[in-house]
Image (cartoon, rainbow, N blue to C red; front, side, top):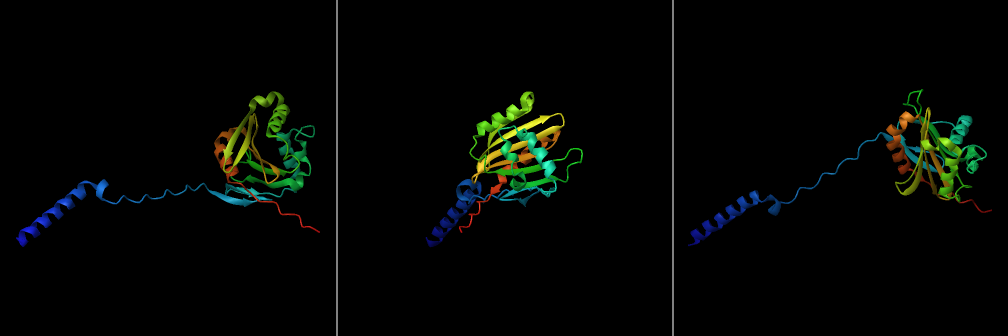
Length: 217
């Protein structure tokens, strides 16, 4: 009797083993999903004044004081000169440049430059007024301007994209830490569409540092 009982138990064990092979979803432990690696975008951190930003590793920071004339001309393309409601961006510009540089991989005939400016005086100006000012400055050329409100990383950003003939730029405007920030990528119009995703990614990566409190006397 004991022998028959043992044979019956062995038969049941064999049947359960076969069933487990045929029903993996019910009796087998699910496989642990393998994490998908983050794509290597070839970007590295660059340190500016009061901020950090991820940019392609081909970018090189330049001396803002040495290139001040070119920086002024570049920002005037967005602001519109001394008569613009945004003319305060040009005031004390040398000390308000947070980062200035260029993509060294871009051909000399179609360079890509980046200017980041911070400004305390315009922090209280509504973004709607900034939109109107840029449109007014461009006048008839405003047809070549596209304005969008985007969420990039932790912040809401207004993006101005302009391209006509040999002039092209993508400017990102937002407020943070009591300052108005303007991130201005300048490149020929033919490059704008190809590089727009990289520009967006870089702006989304920006880390703005809290201002250092002024020591009390």
